[in-house]
Length: 519
Image 1 (cartoon, helix red, strand yellow):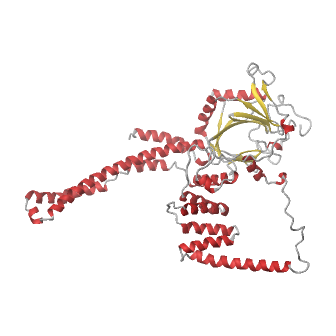
Image 2 (tube, one colour):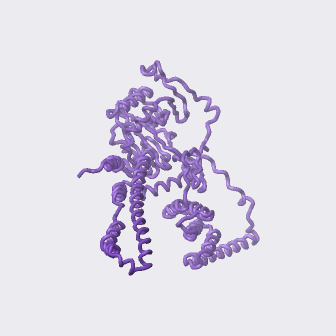
Image 3 (cartoon, one colour):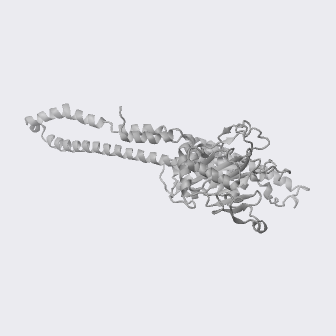
């Protein structure tokens, strides 16, 4: 059986989707879904036109019979006295109404339904929807965005502003609720309620939203506010059984708290029980080195990290770099600048062309798979919630441009590429991130790169328009723990990076060992 041309095109498009899942982890692959949806809209419009044509025919039939029956019922006997009218009545009821029935029952959905059925198997899953929702919550926390800012689409640098409906806000709140995340449940149910109060129409009613809202607030220990929302719910639905029960429970708990507070106050008034000035002192400000790493990470993403002192800054320079007169860079040295001092990081400017970037993306896109990390327990690769992206590995023998890029890295760093890992290309999805991590294997991970047989990751080269380079290991082979780094969640846009992890083997004469641990 031959497939129609549009089917062949569709199937060829779907073949590129069939091997993938976790759409939310890669913006690059999500673009395919836009074209899939566009094709479905075209198919839907064809179905609508077919339905409209069918209805138009039924409408014309109804209008014709309406006028005919109106005239005929004025004088039924006189009308049927005409033999032609009698014949046509028999014909209509015996044949034409049957034809009309067939027309009404005719299925114009075949084309649309078959198209939808084919494509549905490649649609995003519940996991994708949940992943995208959690990404929004992650962005909200990292960049300290309020729910209204996100709902109204007022994000910095956006080109295509998009508003969230009550249903969207409610869905986010429900996903947070199912994760026992009452903080975000409150934020998004409150936003849904706000938009309902402003008159937005929705299939979601205020009672349902208030039910979630009051409970999530109660779970955070704010019984008084939970009580207020419960009272509002009961004003709308006085017979809501759960709310009636909650009302009594909240009032009981508040009375209990009030009595407990009075007891404490009474005891403090007793002789010798007065609170001392020492106890009333404000808590000391938390030192920067005591701030949890997650908070530091989020602060850095917001641009609130530590600034380099002027003295340290004065020791950073920019230069033209030819790596000890490498023949490739003697006449056209690379632009190199010091990016950081501890650890020492250098940046290379204008080091990869737009043409090369597009070619790398073109080669990587059909191979993108959910990015993995090394499991320190097993030494094997596995997916992780703290790395939300998709990656692909490109080998030098597949395309001369990849070979050329690898050679460029070798020429500029002076390190052997034969033992390095293949060029990795990563595309970050909705709120895509890579939380703080090391590139090298630590002492408690002896099997991290055992299967490669090339030793530890001595250095990292990272392209993102420009390129940065740093050593993960000291010359002694000990890991440099100051190289811990991260990728901030993508707030707006589409992020592509490419990296080369360079290993120890083959560098023995290119970077001789040091004598001290931190050398």
